Length: 207
Image (tube, rainbow, N blue to C red; front, side, top):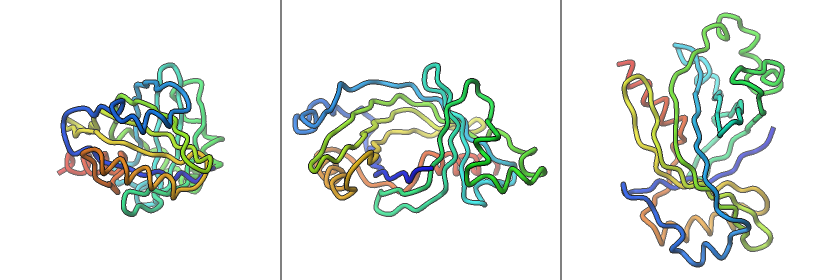
């Protein structure tokens, strides 16, 4: 289990950002920027038992790699998201129940009527540019620039955002970076996670 701390910034324009044009940002790079294609499926019961319990469950594919992730709802304020997270690699897109039993979802595994009703609820698919940055005081931050969409039923909504995840160091330095990016680019702080977007879309689809 780890405590995930990240700051989310929503892009307020449709056009892609040119982060490479920010010389002060590129000067912080620890390694070359690289791209990923991420496809994630989020699971719950028809009556949203996991959401009600305060946990999220997903399977994510990154290239040939599969990951299962459990996240607590945590808290979000002024774009800063803090939540407990459990993530494990899989050899195939099938849940590892032993690993899940070590997470916050464990009490629900013991309820057969809940676990047997688990089904896909929505998916996210997006392109991610990953920037690993070194800030002051040896603070390391992963900047993820994501463009894609959330899909539920026949509906979809756009994903266009920057996430700044603290890997090491002081969250205050991460916050300073977020403020500087917000001043330079068409961005606004967002308290809505991708899972939050997906649940809202799925609930709209159910109506």
